[in-house]
Length: 247
Ligand code: PGA
Image (cartoon, rainbow, N blue to C red; front, side):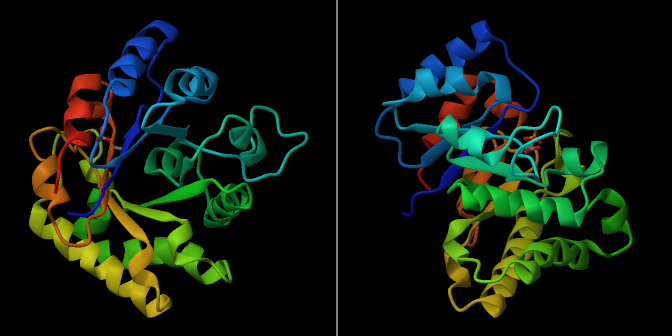
């Protein structure tokens, strides 16, 4: 029974008051069988740090700048995230790829800046509904992974996390089937092992409409080392229930 990585992505949700309640519920969870992380909007990182320090829950951010610092209005650097003791950061979430037109180069730079500050990047990859219809799911996913694997030399397989998130499953209530999660995770695993002899050490998460209903089935699958949870992480008790699953 291995420890899983359970990550909550709050997206652009929260307020000082509602966060306080969520943090209180989560910080009260002790002896969890899994590593649990919440990714909060930048402005609430100080609150996360103050509320979760000393608890078993870690925190992080949903994005990071592709620049180290300087005249980049509105950006937040990896160094700043490190100042708030962020442990993890999402890189290349499909909502950012789409609404902020994030290119491959930008994604690699963000990934590298996170690593430079010892923040674990969670690289989000996944096909759209159209890719799927066109039978391109596998190639799209592996290409997105290769963007990082091929450009960053000496990348330590244990230093980052991959999140497979089919875009059509995000926020739709329609999670991928366990069969297709299994198939895609084994493909990603095989690819990682071909890339590096220690490819087994990279954790692969599944994301896309994970709920209290389906989380256990998903977490029990081979090559699924955790889940990335959006909507269901906003209800602290539901998220805590997922965090307590032993798989
Ligand atoms: P969802 O979001 O659980 O609401 O589908 C997942 C994500 O975008 O990380």
